[in-house]
Length: 222
Image (cartoon, rainbow, N blue to C red):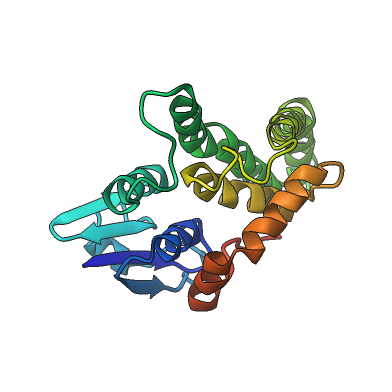
């Protein structure tokens, strides 16, 4: 029996979406965020030492990391669905997207959130102008142009396609959360393919079932 440990309003929703697509027999355990810190509760550390979500249990196996979980579920339960044939050029492009989502795109979004927190955090009046200036410099010189570069790349990759690999695959499962986070953080004005892509994800029947069970993925943080 599969068990998914899901932190509310987190990237773990995409794993629930995948389970719904697969029609897998699973148990869902949801965890609320700490109301003060918004972090995962200590209870998750009883499942895995890092206390992060998502966590997947399948018999004696406990697996962390969205990319590893996505790959495992598709290989173990996909019956040939949701991934190109191994060894093909399409397969390696698919693998690239699986890793790109967390290795290249999400760090930019996390940096944006961190520097936003620096700008709004309480600080002595003589420190705040300095911290804001540093934050603005980093965002203008690195975060904003790099984010635009990546979003433009994905926009181009989606040209003429509904899904990143042509058909729905694990690549779309992995890319759903960072693009939803980008839309929440920056908006996606000027990226019509990305906007349409996220609309397709939101309208997907399995995704709607996942949201009905666990709520939306993206945590709204000012």
